[in-house]
Image 1 (cartoon, one colour):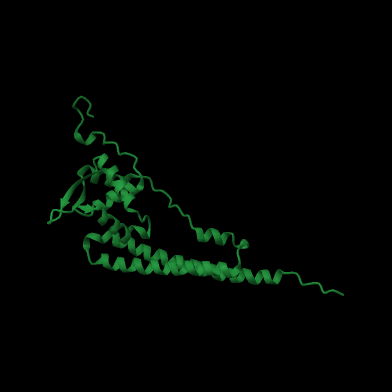
Image 2 (image 1 turned 60 degrees about the vertical axis):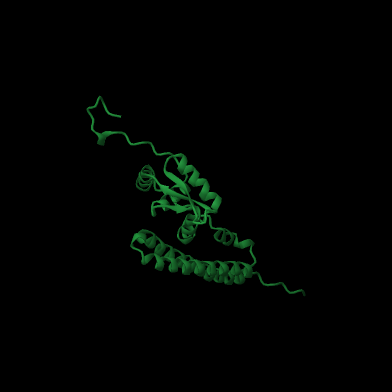
Amino acid sequence: MTDGGARGTHDEEPQAIPDLPTTAWAVLGMLSHADELSGYDLKKWADWSLQFFYWSPSFSQIYAELKRLEKHGYATSRTVVSEDGMRGKRMYAITDSGREAASHWVNHSPVEAPVLKHSVMLRAWLGHLAEPDRMREILNQHIDYAEKMQRRAQIDADGADSNPEWAYPSAVLRWCVRHYEAEREFAQDLLTDLDKLAKQRSRKKPAKVQNP
């Protein structure tokens, strides 16, 4: 709002940005990469990239966020009918206000600490209740998982490198590769620590008293 017309447009108060969940910004951000995307496209893109560091959404979650974005005027949709006229597909596009809102969120939202809910670490933390062989099995399964995710992230990063428009997602995917590599190494280090703990426990066990 201007002060009696004396203030220029650069002094106008920016439009308030609604407090949307981060998942909504993730969907809106994916829309910013293309002219139009379907719900299926968004699911495919999320599984290709976002799942390695943030979110692997269901179709119902994606469509719920798209509905929310349309309500706020950040996205529009239209139905595209197939050539045979029998099937229709709804396509979604980001609006100018949606692009501005997404840019505002990227640049001005608070930097939040990542939420770490690591069930394998929790089970290892309770290792005094675990059977030693089972704990090693759990950690080896986690190592296999980290190696699988590292390989998949590397494949997707290599694929993104071929498209200049995916420079930023490609850089993040390389970060994901290093993350899963480190996760594997941390689990391997913990296996080594468990071996040391097992040896310490065995030395501390009291000797059995022989009956006279």
